[in-house]
Image (cartoon, rainbow, N blue to C red; front, side, top):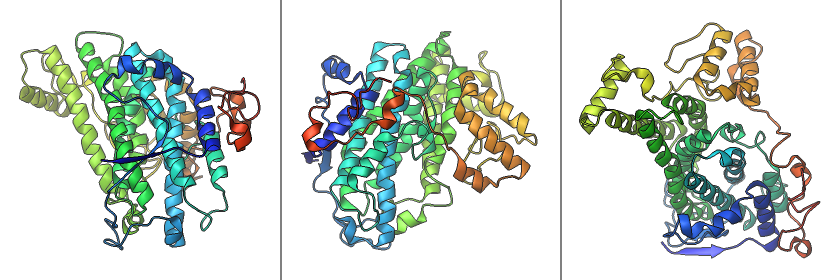
Length: 451
C-alpha cells in the first residue's frame, strides 16, 4: 500500500523529540544498533504515514455509503466532539505506554529482549506523533476552545497516573510486566486500530494501516518471550516461573477488558461510522483470542515437559488438568496458565467492583476479597498506589458509600509526583519556532531539565 509521509511543523516535531529525550533516553542506542537487531527492517523514522487509495465511503453506521469526512467541520457537533475525544485518548495511550515501559526496561533478562521493547517504544512514539498529525492538520474549533498547541502540551504533560485509560496508569514492577503488557494490552490496541481503520473520518482511517503493521511487532514482543519462558519453566528454570507469569496475567487482563469500554456500550460509535463493532462484541473476540494464546503457551509447556505428547494430546491434557483438576504426568492445574474470570478485579463495566475471584468464586467480605486480589497478583503490586486506590473504592462500594457506577467514574484518580524527571510537569514542550531548534537545550522548555 502506497504511503504519504509527512512531518509535523518544526515546533511540534521538536516538542516530541524533547519528550523522547526525557522518557526514552535509550532511543539513540536503538538507532545505533538497529541494523544489528532488525537488519531486514527499514530504518526507524519519526514521521506520520497516511495510506493512499483506501475506501472513500463510510463503511458502517447510519451514513454507510456516503463519502467519508475529510474535515471535522463537515460533521455535526456530536460526531466531531466524540471523534476529538477518541484521537486525544489514542495519543495519550501511546505516550503513556512509553512511560510505563521505561520504568523496568533495564531489567530485561537479555539484550535482545531489551532492544525489542526499545523498538516497540519508538514505534509507540511514532503512533503518538501520528495522532498529533491528525489533531494538528484539522480545525477543531467547532467543538473545542483548546488550540492544537494546547492539546499537544496537555498530552505531553500527562504521566503515569493522569492518562485517559486506566491500563496506562498502572506502574510496571518487573520486566515480566513489559512482556505481558505487550501480549495483552497491545492486543487491545490491535483491535482498536483495526476498528478505526474503517472510521468515517478519512484522516483517522488512513493513519491505521502503518500503525497496525507496527502493532503486529508489538504483539510478537509479548508472545515470543512468553513462549521461551514457558518452555524454560517446563525444563525447571526458576527465572520466570509459571506462577509469576500467571500473576502478571491476572494483573493486566482485567485492565485489557476495560479498554473496550462498558460491555453494554459502543452503539453510538457504530451508528456514527467510527467503529464496526460494539464494545461487548469486540471484547468477546479479544477474550477468545487471548484464550488461544494461553492455550498455546500451555501446549508448549506440556510438550516440553512430555516430549512424546502430540499437539492433540496436549490440548486434551490441558483441558483435563484445568477443567477437571486432573494430575497428568505430574502436572497439576497450578503448573499451567489460565485466564482469570472476566469479572475479577474489574473497575468498569457490568462487573465493576463486584467481588468475584480469579476462578469465579464470590466473596462476602471485602477484606477477604482484597486479600484474594493481592494473593493473585505479583507481590510488588501490594505496595502500589494503584491497588491502594482500588481498595479504598472497593470498601466504599461494599459499605454503600458509593455506587459501583460512581466508583468507576472515580477510578483511577492518580497524579504521579515522581517519574523519570519530577520537574517535567513544569516544562513547556511546544516552543516558538524561533526557539525550538534541535531540541538539545536544557532548562525551561527543553524537556531535559534535571529532576
